[in-house]
Length: 330
Image 1 (tube, rainbow, N blue to C red):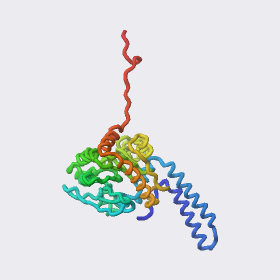
Image 2 (image 1 turned 60 degrees about the horizontal axis):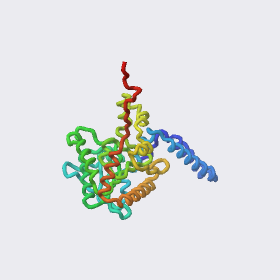
Image 3 (image 1 turned 60 degrees about the vertical axis):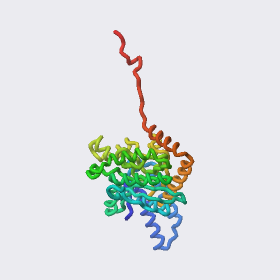
Image 4 (image 1 turned 30 degrees about the vertical axis):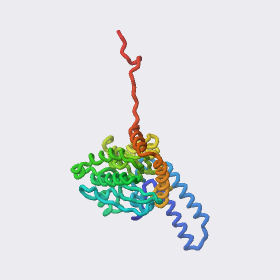
């Protein structure tokens, strides 16, 4: 796939073009400008650091959707060995929007499951652009139950705009499939680790998102609705997606502050797509650290803590009438 540039990355692209010109000039004219090249490289790094340090929520959504960003299969290839993919929900068909199977991470046997997008038109059509049908969630549940049966930790990687909302999903009961997954994931007696690696859209993400420890990559997002969908409802215009993204509080720091995620996994400078191997190694490190900690807990404690964790989510306030506002006798 050719290089893809986000709108806010234009200053970086311009500096990289100048660096390329300078390097070409040095080679063709046989002139040593190595000091200038080094300064230009430093300037590019500083510019990239400043831009990515101050991303708006909408810009973070754009990074999370970057077509070169690593997907579930990329992480499986870079983090695991002996991956044995399992197929089908044993009811309807094999949904390629969700993949999973047995794997090893540094010798630790796990069940790894995740939503998958395509790199091109053919791949996106095969994976339905990362939007799973009911059979995808039923496949995921079948694999999780299998892991629970054999005492294997469960790892899920989330990157989906949401579950597929079409008539085929309604015919095969998408709401019921997601609801059953939510219920069953609270009962597993093995550690369950969740990571949002890109888009975390609505119930489609939550359908494989109930676990003991929820992580999110630095530039990923997790939201009840897409910014465009929110803008279409509130402002009657999808062009207000940037305002919607800010209002939804969908970025990693906002989610951590709200208690909806437990940890932010840092990304390489410029996003996960800038260095896939480094990103995979960072995520693997965080997964193994948390898995080691969770494996010290008994199954009963895991279940109780997991339930209380999600039960405590949400913020509300109660107000009672005061004497000042109470009606007075005439």
